[in-house]
Image 1 (cartoon, rainbow, N blue to C red):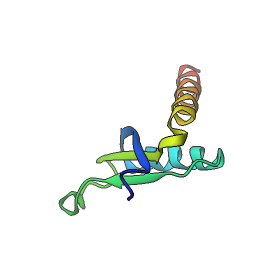
Image 2: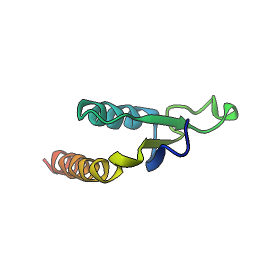
Image 3: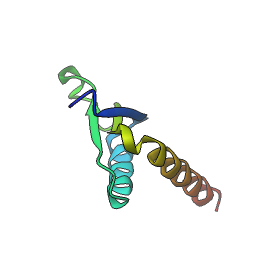
Length: 79
């Protein structure tokens, strides 16, 4: 990963959640890179921490989209 080009957007627990966020951002035409722990974490990939990186020029828009995404998930859970 080109550290100069990408910045950390967020960190989530669980690859499944990272995959959902990745798909959501890619649908909005934002490039995404996922980074899961180390090789020693192979036994807990479904529940380990996953860092989500986006291009620096897209980080503000990504944060706004992620906030809207989280709010929509909260609304769904309340029903």
